[in-house]
Image (cartoon, rainbow, N blue to C red; front, side, top):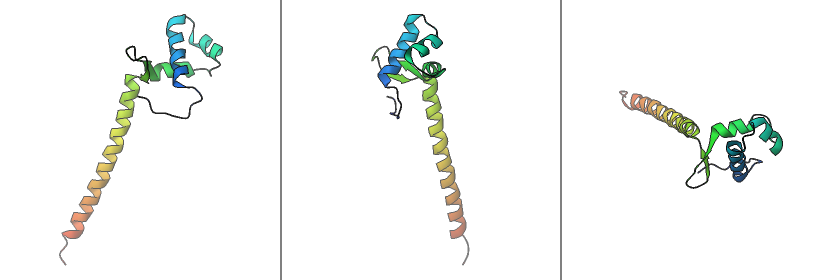
Length: 98
């Protein structure tokens, strides 16, 4: 399921725009003009989302899902690195002879 953002376009609108792109035979530029979208927005949606044929819901594309997972793992790695540095300093402090 997609994360909700403050977008002027609803999920239903995006889904219908992508469906129109797939079935109408019109170019992206023509559809963007017809729907009042800025230039290139439909291409971004096409790369970012896909319509699940079974549930008919708008989902992140596989590439976007992998990018999100990569960002999550990088954040987690940074936290682990910081924790490791704290543990190293703690061991150094407690292993000193008084």
